Length: 160
Image (cartoon, rainbow, N blue to C red; front, side, top):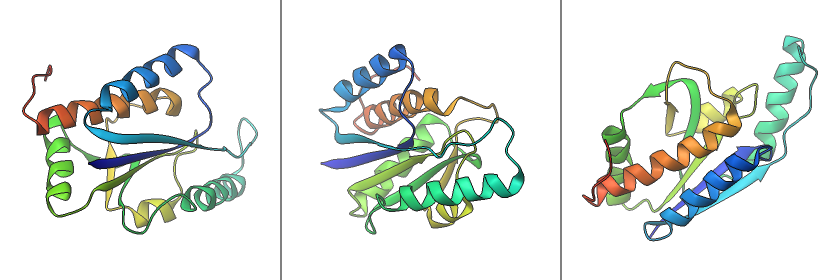
């Protein structure tokens, strides 16, 4: 069975997001073992200097890196990444699973994004849109797209 781990910076602050995440985790149970690991964010001021941003990103990358397995297919979620539609996304997961990879890790950064070191390690840097989304809402969006992809892989109906 496919194993999917989502590494996300910061706890969800809104109950409606918690409920949505719980719903998709429930829906995903027949398809994959999915876990969400919450990694603490690094605090910073409202408008940090560039040097402070780099320190925050490096500290978060170090904490995230502790959870990234060597044998995983690593996907970094980043606005500057490659954009795929849902079918193309499902094809990436299917192709990797067919080559023997059964573990996938998706990394969601915090408000400042991800450090270059995480993007450099990733097998795929993925963007969902040129639009900017709150990183907490993105956790729910990612779970929905993973669910959609696994339904597509199995040839099961789902709204495209």
